[in-house]
Image 1: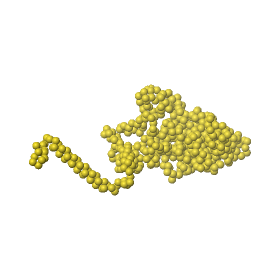
Image 2: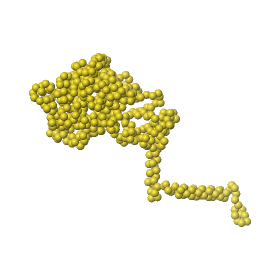
Image 3: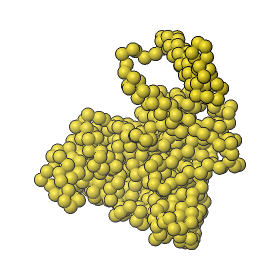
Length: 563
């Protein structure tokens, strides 16, 4: 019932009590919201000096925040406790800057999207950079606490490839497993149905690329090596005065040649004479008397080792790694070994090379940023597994004499059975380089294929290097040399040199001997054989040429004109 003032009394359990409670809750929430609003306003004012411009839209700011968050979050790596003694953190640096700072001499592939940075794993918290690993750092900052660092190369973007890093006693080799059928190495293909099994570094998707030397090849080479080592002291005594006469600044340019390749040797000499280049430091190791006479007739120092060269082939190789080619590879090994033993720096080069400038200027210039290396190689261009990681072309290289290179040449001599097995000087060179670079600290530099100074057959034959060849032939760039590698035989080398405007030998002297040439010419050999101007001829429209050769046939069926 109503009270005297007409109000209905409130009862704890009635509807009026419930309504009053709801009103109180609403008021509390409103007050809390009001306080929150003012706190937010005050915080906004306090941070106003660092906020973005007021005219930035909230949508664009949100997008920017998300972008920054994504960019930052990708730098963080979660390291599980189970491997924190192996990896305390992971950082990244610019790939080009890293290679500029740490040049181990391998030919560097160009950086590209997805392969623009180098990953650095820190083994201990004391090796972590001061600036942390939550951002890309400079090379100096990233390595500031690294007292030692191991560098591992692996080809990027390889399907189904995994890298395993295990905490364990030190090893300086990489161990490889592949899914290949058990017990078979030839005529096989990698397949996911097989278990991973231990293989050599020369195994590829089609199985083993290079066989272990056969016992017969090992025995044959051992017999050859006994002859060489037994006669070495005597041969070195004969060689000493000739080498001393050729040496300048303790450096000799070494070439090896048989009569079958003699026109290429003559072209090298004639082209240098036409360009006014000094040949006084060239020493030719002739593997037959006819070649010795030709070399001396052209004004070159020459040496013939009758003990070791008597059984060498006199004919030119018809193709890569045939018997004649393999025999000459052994001669290439002996001649550099002997000059190195005598204490000289050696520039070794094949005969299928022409000079535009004397390359010794590059190797002996102490102001050259690359002067500190022990050995330098022209980049073969074929960056295949068997030549990895240096891709050395054994037809043009420089060896600075020191205890590391002397021991390397001795080890290469002991690996001659690889040459006997594979027919390639290059295979033995590449494998021995890898071991000595890691084991003995031999500092090797490959003059990579993207440099202008040392082009070769890779540039001549690869379509992707057409502009380089155009610039070279137009005289816009002037390398030190050109090496006609990647070419099947001496006949094609001659034709290609003629097209390039780099052939200087008259046809009357090609394949002939000094005695025959001089019998029909009352003059010296150089005057009879060397042209003062290049003998330019067209042969193939689809190969580089100094002049347009559009009317010539292609050497490769269906190929269009290079011009």
